[in-house]
Amino acid sequence: MNINRPAYSNLVKDIKAGKFVLTGELEPEKVTSIDEVLDSARAMKPYVVAANVTDNPLAYAYMNSLIPSWKIQKEVGLEAVYQMTIRDRNRLAIVSDVLAAQYLGIKNILAISGDHTVLGDNKGAQSVYDIDSAQFTYLLHKMIDEGVDLAGNEIHGKVEINVGIAGNPNADPLMPEVLKIGRKTKLGADFIQTQTMFDIEKTKTFLKEVEKYNCPVLIGVFPLKGYGIADFFDKYIPGVSVPPELMAAMKKAKEEPDKKKRHEKYDEVNIEFFGPFIDEIKKTTSAAGIHVMAVLYERIFDPLLEHF
Amino acid sequence: MIITKQKPIEEIDEMIKPFPKLFIVGCGTCSTSCMTGGEEQVQEMAERLGDRVLGTKVVEDPCDIRINRRDLREYKKEIAEADAVLVMSCGVGVQTIGDYANKVVLPASDTLFIGETERLGIFHDRCKACGECILDETGGICPLTRCSKGLLNGPCGGQVNGKCEVGDYEEDCAWVQIYDRLKEQDRLDLFTVFRPPRDNSKKTLMFHHTNR
Image (cartoon, rainbow over all chains, first blue to last red; front, side):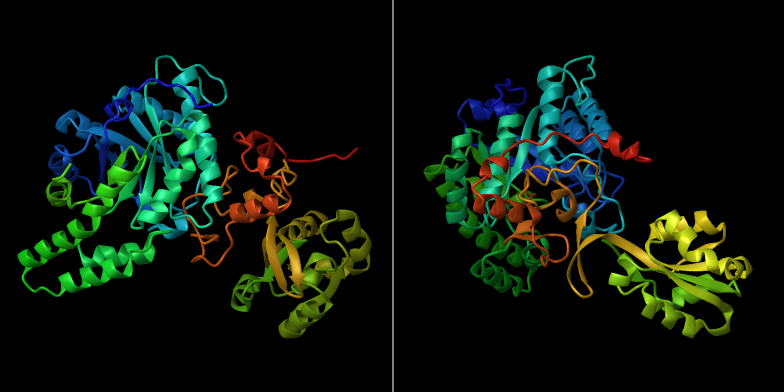
């Protein structure tokens, strides 16, 4: 039986209201300014109900994700999905950050494992993994629904946050992933956001398998801003491969010497691939929405989503 | 078994530099099996270092202070004259020899893990000595050791075709292995059990143990 938690965030409110939701993604990098993140947040705001703020993705040491999560809410009015990995935090640090997030008005947390430190830019770092992502989901349940931490210590004040978990429809074999998701939904997940998908059949299979858990799923898509990012994605992101025909189209677009025209060609390739992909998910599956990871590629939202 | 590998010889040379006279101790148990501290390796080291070596002994169990007393009794003079003892065993042997001999002890090996031997010289990391064994629930495969994140509740998103994101997808994902094993044994109900966070204080406070 799933935990019946109120909808605290606009994201979960919209899902519960039966809307097909869109979330975006923001990636603060190794910077001391978040102007770029705020600009991106402004650019995507008309299209999405909330935006994920990544937490040291690929184990690269970037700016703490809580501050930009708070700032996009405060200055842009865009709801954040504050991503938290258990790679960099033990249970004390998690409790601290969740309490701070509540104070700052954060309404969504995505509870994830995080890529291993050996994949990152400080390969010699010790990964924490004091608890795993299922136990993290359980910890959030204890804090939100019971007002205590893992050890049973009372929290003074309410934690009103909705909890997201990650899913990987690309996982092969798929069943261990599906069963893991089932366990996490029972522990208190309000929504699932998936890894980037390029394969509609894998997406449908996954949705069918997790339907029984009755937890809304947002399918991840990653519009490719340029050939470089497509190549990087294909080579280095765990479990993700860009279909050869899409890679070929991106490569062809790359050959256009004029920058403006090249951008237009990239956009065309993306619209041609992801337009029907998103359309099919919306029309033929049980997915609750799409998580559009168009990092620094906000200009694609308008043409990509114009038929929504 | 405790798996060791010999340190690079240049590192050993650098380490022993300040100590002109040495006594070498080997290990008749794990390090003999690992070929890092058996008779052959101890003799090889002694020959390489030449006259500065006052004596050598492969102790049956250098991690047992009683066995050190028994096996090293006849070498008391040589050990007393030596500036340091070069120990060709795991870190436990090095420390126990240090306690026994009250001398500078120098490790000739790096201790790697508690491992399974597949065949001569091929070992696999199998146990983290966590103090709370759950192998009954995980099909006899330790997730704490064999999952690179030590996850207790299933695979992470870094599993691709049953391989782990750590180590360029060459290592098996422990949680896929556990899934396959439990499925084979018709015990998949164990896969979905929620294992709560570990009480790490138990291990932290495990300084000693008495089996009496």
